Length: 216
Image 1 (cartoon, rainbow, N blue to C red):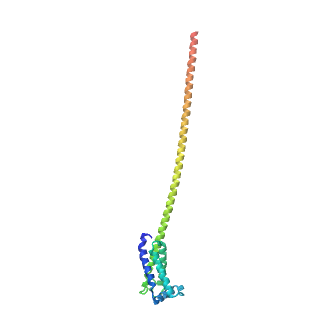
Image 2 (cartoon, one colour):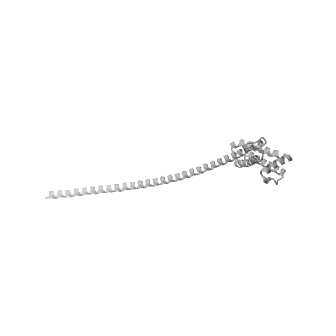
Image 3 (cartoon, rainbow, N blue to C red):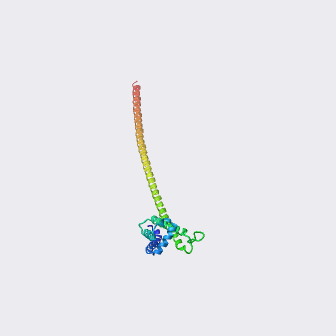
């Protein structure tokens, strides 16, 4: 039970529970009156005995009241039951002759006792709708969290892959540069040795030429 639902559930639950217990103590005259009202609007109750109808109504109200008071019962379930029960009483109010004025909505003095039960419909719908919307919101948040997590995982995978590729390219370039430096250095050393050898050969040749000229 959500904390914001507690006031309306406690009030309506206590009301329904007390109403059901009171109906268990109804006199035969009161049972006949209730049965007559209900069967005139809902014909499927005509074959039921007045006493049985009164007990059925009483147990239904007690069960609904208990569902509203028990925190383990979801507000959506309790609210739907309350709205359905209130809708039945509203139909009884609207269709019973003498309960409404000429416009068919505003209650007469006799219909006021039934008209006030319309608030049960509003209370039940409020509980059911709030629970439904809250559940939808939580589901949407769960989906959003899942999508965000998946996107994060994909982004992490792409980043890791890009990092691996970057490291690989850097390593390859580094190795290539090292090899290139080694190759260039080798060529330079080889050329340097060749030039040195050439100089020595030229020096030897000039020395031989000078000796030959002196001998002459």
